[in-house]
Length: 160
Image 1 (cartoon, one colour):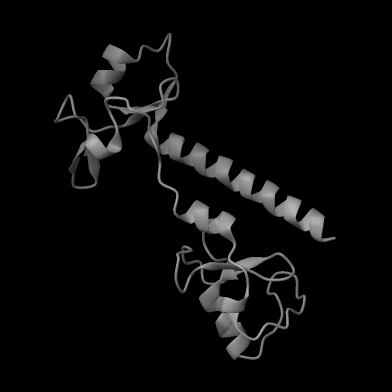
Image 2 (cartoon, helix red, strand yellow):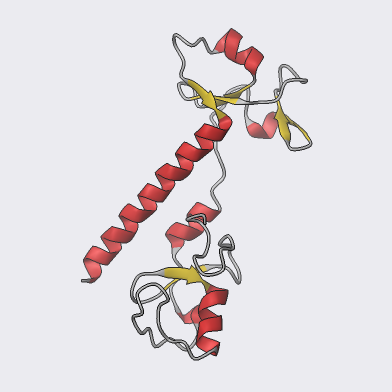
């Protein structure tokens, strides 16, 4: 299960029926799951069993941290290999300089996505830190999850 998904239905949070809402106990679920529980007469949090006494899920505050996280898209600086300026080939994003080469790497030093050819020419391993795009996405995701947990803990600490 992904941390940007509702822990009840495992669907990714969105801005409508799957909008993340925060119960008074601090736990967050999608609007649809909370409302479904309310409709079934279940007025307790499924994580901690604290009674919430809510009659309508949309009366609960939106959990903006989860909402922001679920709408995050990777950003790049104005390097040659920006995602928006690259040509897509099916599910691959292609290099703008080497049209036949897909972007597979991320240069942490320059914050740029790059193909293998550009990595050799423009991002030497002695001056740049290159990782796979997949690992870059995993690192960003882990960083955001850690940030969300820290923010959630700060919110909980202020409620007690």
